[in-house]
Image (tube, rainbow, N blue to C red; front, side, top):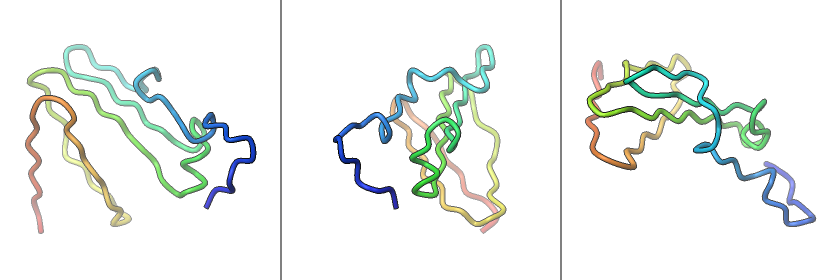
Length: 88
């Protein structure tokens, strides 16, 4: 776990993913921003990673597969979404 910060600074535990440049940007489809320990050191301290996928209207995401049986949380924050789980 990360050590408590003595100077009460949130610079090391807050990252504005909305302001970050996307790693992948596809015209008329959407953009993907991946956060890793390199961009946001706090994630490495707690053993997490994060990905922000912003889709345009009528776009869709390809299926995802995690080989290490990791847990993924998916949130639809605006509009609507349909999630389908197959192969269980």
